Image 1 (tube, rainbow, N blue to C red):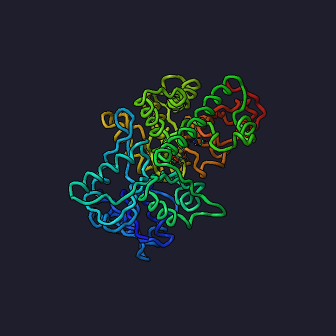
Image 2 (cartoon, rainbow, N blue to C red; image 1 turned 120 degrees about the vertical axis):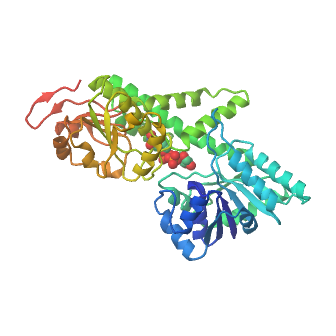
Image 3 (cartoon, helix red, strand yellow; image 1 turned 90 degrees about the vertical axis):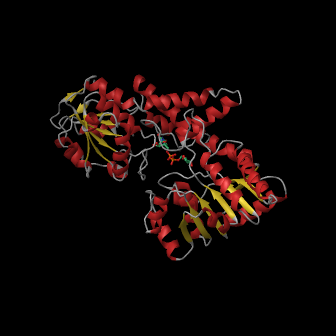
Length: 467
Ligand code: UDX
């Protein structure tokens, strides 16, 4: 089938590459000439496992092309995917200008029947606005309306997006209940048929419910995380182990194990933005989302939890202290720094006079970019942040190691080596990577999130209770 993808961000590129992989003829368009240039010279502007190979293979096979030519892109696809960004506005609502610009271009140039698919995460009612913008353009040209809008939200996780697309749990499809809607539904059904494994993955519903489903899913997941973070903070106070509690409750099939990991807060492009947007949508319709407002507040506080533990142990003034920070990306397998907890942590350490030596397996380039923006008016503070290529270089001479992202490379370090390198054998772990008794045996003072603080049993046999 002939497919156009508008927007070459995470969602657009993954969607385009995966649809090309199953044999479609895909045309990706972006107004950002720099991105298109990178793609046309064999590069990929983002880090996503497997994506570069997928794009290279399909480009070589002539199944995917990249262009800034909007008119050609509208002419190409019978199905037009809108996969542009919806960044939060000042007030937290989703900025739809890119989505509506895409609709405008489609209306301005289209001939023949088009299915327009909203893939971007957009508030309930956006499909209707997209339809209005297209219709206005068609009216201005004196052309009859010959299109249908479909809402097909994505559920891709960064770092696993290709796999998520290729092996979906569900494909949510919101269609209109009219003649054009029925035609659109048939075309989308055919497009996604190869992704049905074992059983039907497609869930058909009305357009508004499909739009809502995406927000409700992310809000529910964010709620689970904030809930567990609050339980972990309580576990810290009452001396329970959140990891044991997680297993204890996750084994109940009504609860399940996923998304119950306590940590130093969730980040990324989706949860913070979507929770805020849903709160905003509700406010506009006169409803207060009490639970989600708390979810957001708890998460903001949770991004400070490591700083709180550090200050409690080392004091408010960290002047002259050096911290090794492992992990900057908001989660592993991505270079995405949007709303990353590391930004709050690093800023708090620097503000208290400390210096930070950071390492991340892939996000250091992006980190340099975002910290330069975050500290644009405090260059003298930014000088105390440096980057190293290897995790072990960061710990040499550091007062403590702080872990912010759960990259695999950090999961089983050589603790005896770490102990010799750190000035004080002290680890603050924002992702609960290690087993507290093992660290106590190694003589390392260890602070996790909701994990028990265990008396050190050093090799010399000195037992010391951690304060
Ligand atoms: C999320 C949704 O999972 C995906 O379905 C949607 O399409 C986009 O938003 P993503 O933002 O890529 O995906 O990352 P995800 O793996 O969901 O993690 C989000 C954040 O939550 C990360 O910062 C992660 O560290 C944190 N998290 C996740 C926890 O703190 N605890 C958990 O148990 C799970």
